[in-house]
Image (cartoon, rainbow over all chains, first blue to last red; front, side, top):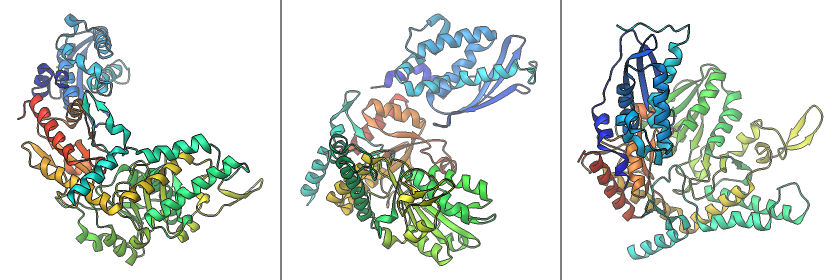
Amino acid sequence: MFADLYQQIILEHYRHPQNVGVVDGSLQVRNEHPSCGDKVLLSVCVDGDTVREVRFLGEGCSISQASLSMMTEAVKGLSVDEVRGLYEKFREMLHGHEPDEDALGDMVSLQGVSRFPARVPCATLGWETLFRALALESHEDNPGQPCE
Amino acid sequence: MKAVADSLWKQVREDFPILAREVHGRPLVYLDNAATSLTPRPVLAAMNHYYEHANANVHRGLHTLSAEASEAFEQARDKVQRFIGARGRESVVFTRGATSALNLAARAWARPRLARGDVILVSELEHHANLVSWHIITKETGAKLRFIPLADDGTWRIDLLPELLQGPVKMVSVAHVSNVLGGINPVKEVIAQAHAVGAKVMIDAAQSVGHMPMDFQALDADFLAFSGHKMCGPTGIGVLCGKAELLDDMEPVEGGGDMIVHVGWEESTWNLLPYKFEAGTPPIAEAIGLGAACEFLGGIGLDRVRAHTQELTELAARTLDGMDGVHVYGPLVGRLGPVAFAVDGVHPHDVATLLDGEGIAVRAGHHCAQPLHTKLGASATARASFYITNQPEDVDRLVAGLQVVQEVFGVR
């Protein structure tokens, strides 16, 4: 009945997540959804205004983990503003708007999540964490490490 | 005999209007009873009757409606008292639910009586309500928690009890039935041994009252906490039952209307039990609903309720554990209500979402028992929980639903 939520591409990312790991010397942010226990450790390298490297260690449902995997692929090389713009498009899709397929790529497969309000936070866990990391990054007390 | 039983449960199901609904085009199979049970017509009718005929505050007014409301409210207390075998009505304190009942006893009985180094014994399978309430107290008093460990099958290591009860153990507070593993815990044994060393015992009976016969006096616990909404009653009402001499010796936690005899400028005197602990306007309709739930379950017979629920629970546990790629946590026998399980290669949230698509309501997560899940080595589990509204066909639907889950994730 709900099988269409679980597009093959989501299951692919769930079984074989991309960019798994921790980048040495990077900025690291932990996040957890207390109600469901989904966890992530995101490590981010920003060079000037550009996201150079993002890796993650995660534990959770297929939606949260696939979304993390897709996000790490999508944001590498983008400027912080471009990351914001992309997330805006992703969020709009999760709230029922027609997706910008060109911009979102693989992430379009998560469109079905919009029908499951309780699962939207799963899809945004990685992004939430990324923005937390970027906020730290721009903070004077937490100067970002240059990328290796 | 089986035909008689089948017709009884068919009749019981007819009292639950919600069972007629469909979810995503499939007849609802409700397997989230451990979170909250469904509500039968007599309970809804009792609450409606209050609002439609006697909608007034209790214990205050001199007018007819208030008198009728007070009478219905106090009759509900009597029904609860009889239902759980409490000695007197003064032992039955209405609370917001099991959580506030546990917190009330922790705060009003334990906190003033605990000193640094004293021990509160709980078990490794406790719900957060019987854990975090103690974290607040240990932080304030310097007392510490000790845990009854679990054996591999999820039952208590009751053999370790004599050792665990050594030293300054002042309070033992444990679950009667685990909300995850479903095992019926040997609380009688714990109560006897705890009393022998002078400790008081509180039983978290959220998953047992209304699911099996309860006799508070025979059990000889000092406190018993439970919720209305897990036993066919409404949300927002629960009970702390306590031995009257202990309740009498406790100071109130909340002050306000109804809990006083006389109020002066500088001080007041407390009302008698149980009102001392019921400050403010109580959940009147909810208490009346809980009383009706006691009558409803009493009408079926608690032995029958237990037999039916346990049979279905154990059937489900056995059947799921026998499926390829499915594992059940906890004991396969001696189990009442909850069946927590894992499906290899599929996260519990995905299991729950896909089952919902099949019209089957289960819960996924840590079920307010995070430390237990750490012990189980799982950050989350899926949980199907059974009660009187369920039938053997529900287990078949669950199995078929899990096969869909396995197909979608390609793990079959």
